Length: 211
Image (cartoon, rainbow, N blue to C red):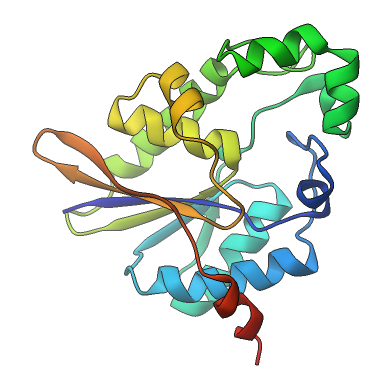
């Protein structure tokens, strides 16, 4: 049974500070590095056979931790980058809400629109991540486990595409993948099924992972 694990990167300072990142190339915070190391140990137990990551540093550094634990090489694909949020990149959530109240209200209602005037919509993201995953899964052995290291919106879009869940429904019902949490999918005769969503290590594990 082939499996797909969609793993969001560890925390960044922008995540902690409530700043829209989009495709800004930010690094993991110290907390994010700790998360990635602890989560890599847990994910290694699931027997990954291939690791492919977004090329943005926060995802690439997260993927490197799993590569170090498993000995697997990490490949990179820019199609797994986060949604581009245009003019919102680098702005705080509060500033975006103040300057673009209509757009923020539309997003809260589940409407899909281009972010930040010239960015992407979820529909755009879903097309590129699904295409990348289809290519990778077509070469995955029957007993293979692919780990895709990506971002919050991109990860949810990928999972929804694989299980046939409309993006609108996923946006409203699934919630976002938390930092360094993952979803596990498995391929059955009738298609892909989601086995778990938003799985991660506990705070107690994080606090002792570097001792």
